[in-house]
Length: 248
Image 1 (cartoon, rainbow, N blue to C red):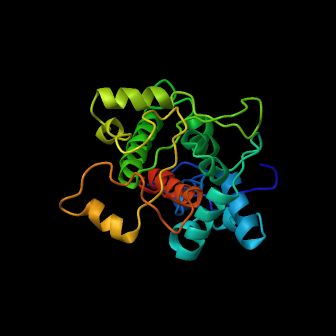
Image 2: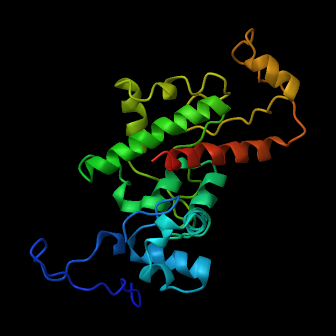
């Protein structure tokens, strides 16, 4: 990225590391912060958003690992504002649509989409872990998200992650994501490729009955709440998706 440079680090030339041009590890742009800020352009964007200075974190990258305030601020920036130049969307916009695959494509792009062992074994496993976590948390909260959801595939805001459906089904077959198998038990729709009907959350009284010793599966259907269903569904969807990233 033009205008973004690493911190000025003295060259190291001693018996232990004779290579000229040695750069200390904590001055490189690897993953830091609450939400994996990485690459020089990621540090530049965080610097502009947080400090109004593109060079601030480029020159002091380890601040995102050593300063809790900057660590969390950089995570909020990446989730709410980070927008790759070829996309017209953010991870937050995608989760408001209930689109899990779109968040992966926005945040990690070609490293994880397509999700394939031919691309990267490490990132392939990371996507599998995210799918497992989304199933686990979504099942617990009674929320089902689309793996890939696009109303108009020709719009730049339409983001998908190739290969994620294959991972979803294969991990159920090999037993690595057992929560995905029972994800739809308490929901009106039973597949992640179908937009689910929104189920009203229970009241506090009904919640206690549901989770009590004598509760029965499916009693949350028909429950009412002072919160509107779309608001509740959006909030829980956000919790479900973010859990898949924060667990790394």
